[in-house]
Image 1 (cartoon, rainbow, N blue to C red):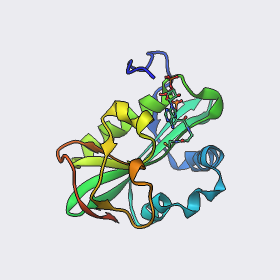
Image 2: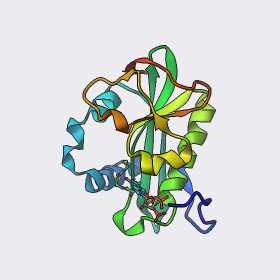
Image 3: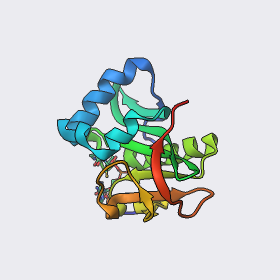
Image 4: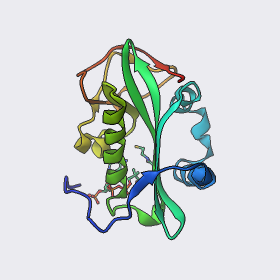
Length: 165
Ligand SMILES: CC(C)(COP(=O)(O)OP(=O)(O)OC[C@H]1O[C@@H](n2cnc3c(N)ncnc32)[C@H](O)[C@@H]1OP(=O)(O)O)[C@@H](O)C(=O)NCCC(=O)NCCS
């Protein structure tokens, strides 16, 4: 995997609208399978308000999506990233990277201390995500998959709690 910038001819990352919701759900279900609702990440999202929803569209179809949620880790305000998904026929073109970069811009705008997610370090490491120990998710998580992208706080600790507006 390279650290090259996304090609310039990719379709843009845009804000999700209410009309996208059905297609986003279908995309995420097809990427992760219906069992995703049982995951600890889903439980955290259920108690959080969305901060950003971002999509990539092509010919009126949603081919990429990411959502970010308001949380705190101990007393540190952060965003929780996920789910992120790209249509299986559109992968390896840089859309995933473009969605992560746009997510980090959302977090910077929100003024939070960093971004938390549950995911694969081999994919997210290139965006500055690192394993985070010392944060307690509201359910079981493989500790090697709990990742933090610092913005202003290197490694927060404590319970991970969803925040409502
Ligand atoms: C992860 C995902 C969003 C990446 O989207 P994408 O548009 O293919 O991403 P990019 O084109 O920017 O990057 C593709 C690169 O990431 C690599 N990659 C993708 N998923 C990876 C993973 N889980 N672990 C390690 N590398 C991964 C690809 O092999 C590819 O490498 P290459 O550049 O050497 O060919 C997409 O594969 C997806 O929707 N997967 C299913 C849902 C999922 O797993 N979400 C993330 C949870 S970890």
